[in-house]
Structures are given as C-alpha cells and as structure tokens.
Image (cartoon, rainbow, N blue to C red; front, side):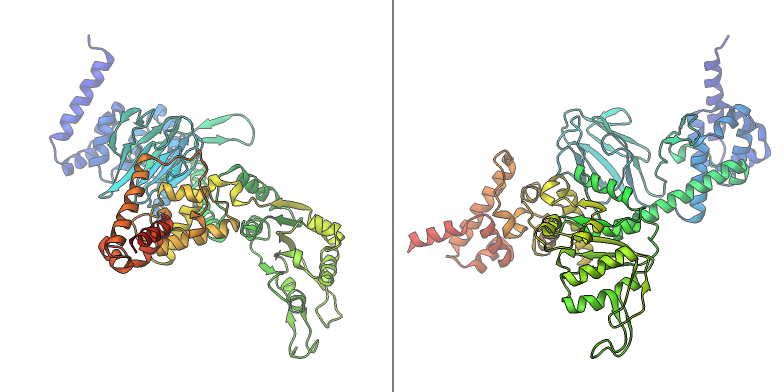
Length: 581
C-alpha cells in the first residue's frame, strides 16, 4: 500500500503533467469551468504547483483560486493571519500607486537591526571598517566582508575573502546573483534583499496594549502568495490592513521631511544621546538651552525639537543675536510703532510676535546686550512685551530655544550675563558633541555631503578612498561639521580622479599627521610611491615646467600643483634643481 507521501507525489506529478500539456488559455478555461480542479490544486499545497500558478495564472483567476482555497477551515485560519494582513497592505498600496520602487536591504539582525538601506547602481561594500558604504560594528563581520554591485539591472553579491564567509539563503557563496527575498548573512548580521516594485517587510514584532502576549509575523516574498481581494477579508482585518498601509506611507513621508528639514546624522553614542533628548524634550513646553562649539548643528537640533513638538505646524523663527547690531536687534525682536524713531513710517511686527504659537530660536544668545536680556526675561516670565515706541502690552505664546558656544555659567559668575535669565534658559540643557568626539560618524557624514553637493552641482557622486577617509577621521575639525562639509565640497569640485583621494582634500587636513597606530596598506603605499616617482620624473623631464609636466601625465596643471603639494614633493624638487644649477 502506498504511503501518504507517495500519494502526494503522484498527485503533484499528475497536476504538473496536466498543466504542461495544455495551453495557458485552455487551462484558464478549465479552471473557470471545473472548480474541482481548483480544489485539487489547493489541496496539493506544493511549491512547484504554486510556482506554476504564479507564472501562468492571469490576475482575474487569482481571486477565484483564493475563494476555493479558503473553503477549507484549516487553510482559512492560516490565511487569516499576519501574512494576509501583509498581502492586503500590498493590494491597497498597489491600488494607490504607493509601492516603493527602489531596491534595498532590510537588516534582520545585528547592530543595524530594523534599518532599511536603499541601494544605488554604484558598488556598495559591507564590513566592519568605517570606510565601508555600510559599516557594521560587529566583531563577527570582517573588515571588508562583501560587495554588492548592479549590472544590467540585476544585483550581485561577492564575498571579499571574509573570515566567516558570506551566506545567501544559508549557503556559503563567493559570488551570487541575487533575487528578491534572498537573505544575505555576514557573521551575526543578516540582510533581506528586496528588489524594485515590491514592499519592504513589516516589522516582525507586534506588541499588544493589553499585555496578553506577542505575535510574530513572517517575512515573505509577495510572489509566494496569492493576493486575496480586500472585499473577501473580514471587516476588522481589512481596516487593520488599511491602517497599517497608511502608517507605512506616513512613516515614509515623515522620514523624507525629517531628512530634508533637520539633517541630524550619526549613529555614535553621543548622537544617540541627542536623539533621546530630542524625543523626550520635544513634546514639552520648557525652554531649551543648546550648548556646543560652532558648527556642531545647534540649529538643526532646535529644528528637530520644533518639528517633533505640538507646535510643529506653527512658525519656527531663527535669529542670530551676534549677526545683528544691538540697536537693530531690539526692533527685530520686539517690532516698533509708527513714529517710534526717524524713518518709522509704519508699524512693524517683531519676530516674537510673528512666531506667536510657534518656536523662537535665539542663536548666540551670549552676545545679547544687557538691556535686551532684561526685556527677554520679562517675555519669558510674563509672556508679554511692548513694541519699541509703544505702550500697549502684547501677549505671546512662544517656546524659546536658545543656543550658545559660550560658557554662560562662567559669564554669570563674571557678571556678563543676567543670572535670572540664565536660570530661565537652562531648564532643559544639552550640549551638542564636537565632531572630534564622534569620529565614527565622519564617514557617514562625508558620504552624505558627497551626495548633497553632487546633486547641487549636477556631478556624479564619487566614492571616498580609504586613505581620504583616514585623513578625515584623524583630523580634529576645529569648525566641526560645517568644516567637514566645506572640505567635501572642495574635494568634489576640485578633484579630477574617479574617487576622492587625499590629495583632493584641503591642505589643512593633509598637514595633520595620522597617529602611529594607523599603518598604511602595502598596496596603497606602493601606489603613493609610484605617484611620487611619476610626478618627479615628469617635472624633471620638463625642467620644472608644470604645464608641460601636466601634459605628459595627462592631468590638469592645477591638479599637478595640488599633487606636488600634498605628496610633499616641493622641497625635493627645489633641492634637485638647486643641485642641477
């Protein structure tokens, strides 16, 4: 007597033979005419059958197959689970034209868990070193673990001779062409590859408010399922799907807006502390005092606080107290009445009045004159003020965020800042970290600025070489992020090679000597030495004529000058020419 598994295999072979012997149109006619054939296919529940259906069934027959499939209580119970919710979201978002169109990696495990990383057509490297496009701080991941490259619209993963190997769907590979839904593993970190015109997976962990437990949904390939019609789902399930689709769309919208309006970038512990502060302080109405050196992103933090507050839809008014003379700053803040002074031909509202209901950001508040400190104190205490030349009090509802690069506590002790105003400001204090205190964020920031300025100048984004990253990471950045952005802009515009090299960076960066523990790789040292020799030979051959030497080397004369300076060849050339004289 045949076993159950043997019977099942016979059914599968029969169905495949049946379906392969008839044309697609004939099979569709049979499926419509003979529901029992549907039931037989549904009962088989075989992967080969499902693959055939995906490739040969028209969309108009999928709902009919679903109807037959769901006649079984056991299968219906399985369908009315999280995977149907997942597919319902797909149906709804497809109908709205909201399906994302970018290939991406979804991080399933490891330090970057739950991150979604968009992929471009340029090569993407993954590894432990900060110079990688996707740095993963995981000891089980090699310095350079694997590379993703796009060729002809398809993506390929290549292992970079990693210590633990690169696995695709559990099998170790040296090179593999990826398909939608493939899982890539590097050490303890795993990534789900999603192609275009598909949805990123829903977060796998769902928590219930009644604390009665948790449920796990499964990350699936939308091609592996049959999409049910929304009107066949229960009302509650459909409403949940619609709500989840709306949440995904809203999350995408907010992510884009946040990235555009306040670009706080970094994953270092220092920046995570800033994010936590913003998250907790934003909903409050308390005054915030942001400290930190120039160029650390104090205004970006202020905008983040505003956009995450209940006042997000109201004005955000920023004023630099150091940039406006004292006489003008008073009228700028408080406004003036007609005839208040010569030239005041009409009434003007001040910034505080314009910002009513929103947020006022006072940058460099340590520069505020003593008389204006007293007037600002009254605004914070009484929530009212008078325009210059006016007598009527004007009520305002504002939240004040102030920033300074001074030590205001020291200024109070020295009598240079009003003590009461200081204590009104320092309700919620935070200090933005200097860039040298979060060096691990420098590669991420540098790549962000490459993309930003490449788009601005309509240039092709260029990768940053490992040596250039080393220069950036080991520089102290006295002007912080602002100086880093300027350096990247300079390198992008002035550089002539396919990638950003150390010689493309401003001279001030190259004067900074890398610490002794950073040892240059033999390959890169050899390349550098070859550059030196070629440059010296060309200049000597042309007897010091840089234009002719540049022509021999096939580079621009400006680039040759920068190369000589950055490679430290000027003194060597001068010495050789002196000996020749």
